Length: 102
Image (tube, rainbow, N blue to C red):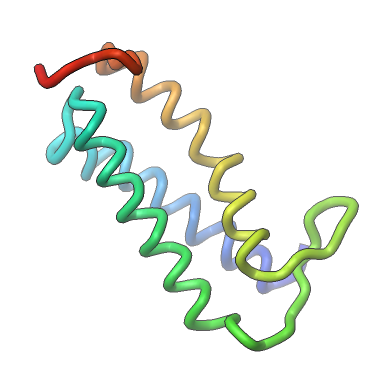
């Protein structure tokens, strides 16, 4: 893994951990709608930060068996890191997809 990939993975890891341990409990709690909107905003923030650096650079990022551009690398790695945290958060805060405002 090169320096570019490592910097993106580190950024995503820090943002996801801070979001799920600090921001989401305070802002969204167990409200699925607020959680989803916050997550969209945080995801857009990460994509914007990475895009500012790599948009138009033509740099390829290694994603195991294939090379992809910055957008797909960031999106796929974000999902890989976020899904376990989201499942943990949902279990901890008793969130289901059919929950209403609590």
